[in-house]
Length: 97
Image (tube, rainbow, N blue to C red; front, side, top):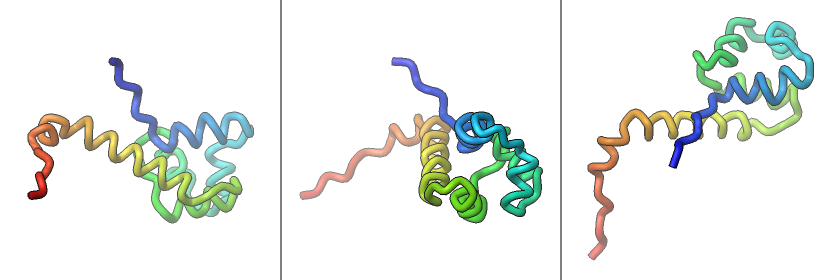
């Protein structure tokens, strides 16, 4: 079974919001009052989605903060599972008596 690509929140921001809405990273940054480099780094997958950025995006796009933070948490979990699979495979479930 082939593993699916782990999708960074920045890819969702770019492909599901910025491109379809015709909004540049520069414009978004100005609208939500953050440095343009922050948005660019998120879109490139080089920076995490912080609570501050998630709050700003949720206010701008009208969706929930948990949507943006959930994308980041899902990404982080998948990355850890991928990076530490062999180590995690050694952990055995505790058996209650």
